[in-house]
Structure formats: C-alpha cells, structure tokens
Length: 231
Image (cartoon, rainbow, N blue to C red):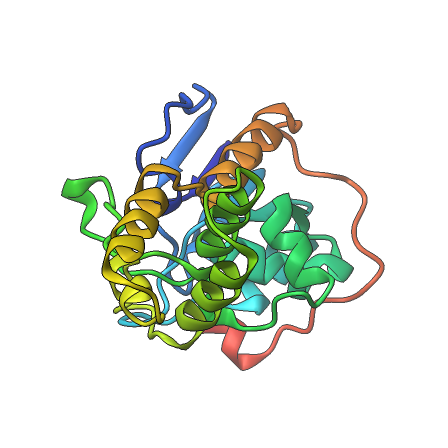
C-alpha cells in the first residue's frame, strides 16, 4: 500500500494521482505511525497540520523507517521533516527540500500558509514564502520586475505572518508609486509559480515508481522504543 498526505500543495494541480496511491488529508501527529500499522509500505509526506493540531513527529518517521517503509518528503511539512531525517533514511524530493537541507532556508514558517477545508480542496488563502521566492525570481528572469523590487518584495514577505501573507499585503508593504504597485501586483498574481506544487508532483512520481514492498534491509541504527512512542 502507498499513501501520500497532501492538501494545499496539490490544490489546482492537473497531475492525476496514480491509481496505486491513496491520497490522504494533511498529516497530523500519529498519522504516519498509524499508516505503518495499517500496512503502508511507501509513505509520501507533503502537507501537515501544525497550528491547531500537533505536527507529525520525527519519532513516527523513524518508526516507519525502522519497519522497512520507504518514506518520501517534499514541499511543505514533508520537506522540513525530510531535511531533518534524511540522515536516517527519509528521502527528500524537490527544490524546497534541498534549500532546507543546504541551510539556504532555515525558517519553518517559510512553507506555512492558511488554507480552506477539505470541501474547498484545501484552497490556499495566503502565499507561502517559498512560493514568493519562486514567483519573484521567475518575474525577474522575465524582466517584469527589477532586482531592487525583488529584494523589497522578499524582505516584505519575510516579515509578514503567514496567515496574513497575501500578494496585496506584500506589495502594500513596499515603497513604490500606485501605478507601479498595480502592475507588480498583477504580475505576481498572473505569473505565480508554486514551487510547493511542483515539488509535490515530483513526490507523486517518486512514490508511484517506488516498490510497494517493505525493505528487508533495516537502517544502521536502532529505534529507541520510548514511552512517547508507545503513546
């Protein structure tokens, strides 16, 4: 069995989820542990709750790896956990994971955003900082915005709380004339690049290609069965 925990990172994606993958809602603490006990051989972690619910625990990822489960991470919570657990065998996918692994991004909040409920397809309501980076860099390459505007937009976006980080809020925080502000705002909206979605789609491909069996080779470390894991 293959499972992928995802929500807002795949909103609006035209990539069909492979038939052999069970797409589950964003993960909460205990969901990875539960998936292992329910027979998952391959787990993809993309999105996860953290604000109103406890986040996926590193220990449950280590538990999955100790059981021979292949665990991939990308885009959001998955990229964070993969950067933290790749030395134990978790497989990171995509540019966001690589940025965390190399220390180019260190703030957990860079992948955070607000989104709607399941009924909306987890519609993103704000913009993740990692997607701000991808978008402004793309517009700079296309010469639609200047390097000075890139620096100003990134600086503004970094200081805005993730629940308030909209394109309008970002543009409103930089110093520019009204006509230019309108142009920049429209450019950001129409030229939006979601690195989170790109990486999530890459993860789906990796999970689909992975062998749907648990590995007989156990990692070169021992899982400590603590009281917290028992809980």
